[in-house]
Length: 216
Image (cartoon, rainbow, N blue to C red; front, side):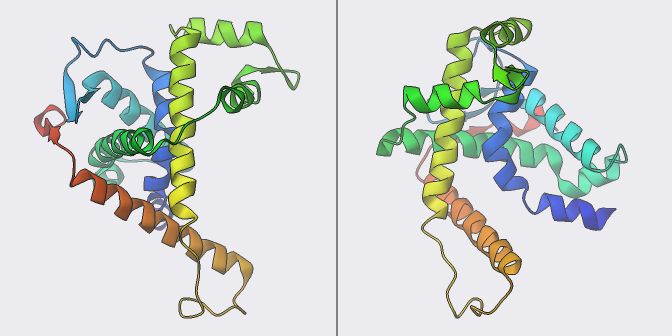
């Protein structure tokens, strides 16, 4: 079981860049950050404690699902789950700030395409505006808030691709005759490492305050 957990943990960093914002969507709705307790401050942006716990709950649910309900407290400690969630939230904010700085954006057409193809809003295989609005209402969210959040999620995905595409395999790393699946796995690892290094470099240039005591 632990071997399987480590396999999934290996890609934890990548997963969070793509899905943290969907954790917020399905978890807490809008958060008033002017009064909410911040667990972290990244530049001028705050990450509220409510956002953190929503992300943590979703992460724990994810691991419970892949272990078919056998995700123990010991496994959680070995994965250092609480810290990974916090680190990923901070990294998301850092990467989003850099995307804005260098002009990476998501067009209205790209946003619309992502929404109309979201399985959560489909009825019999087609986008249903009534389903969309009702789903948002049930989650106490306005279309404006959700679309802003979705645009940010897509922007992060663009940044991930942009950084990853700068990495490729060389003959020194892996022989051209290697199986395609092995080459793809290694390439994914190298791109993950590139993203991590890129974000760590950005963090050194930013003022980041973490209220670690809030999560123990």
